[in-house]
Length: 99
Image (cartoon, rainbow, N blue to C red; front, side):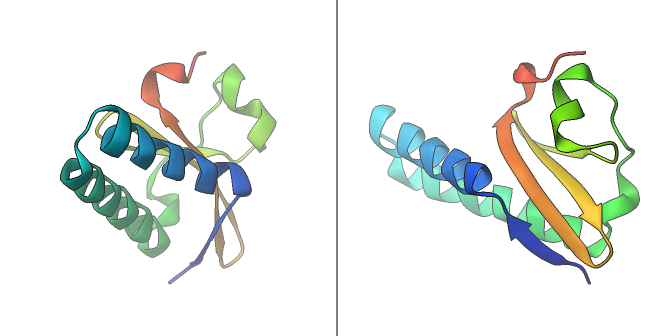
């Protein structure tokens, strides 16, 4: 199994997402469940990180040539694979990824 490492931006993304759902939408239980599902999806990446194809969207080039995406509901987890490491760059709304 691969190790998972989160960028500071990815940690901020998940914290902001939790805050938005829990506090701005007033649904703390939903926020907790959503983040649990998102983290489970990320844990599954560690098992089969190359199962998702390399992406070449212009908006993703900043993350490197081997960038991959896995979606969880309306969010996209942007990551790269390096030897035994899965590096989570960002967790953003899927509609923010443009070609």
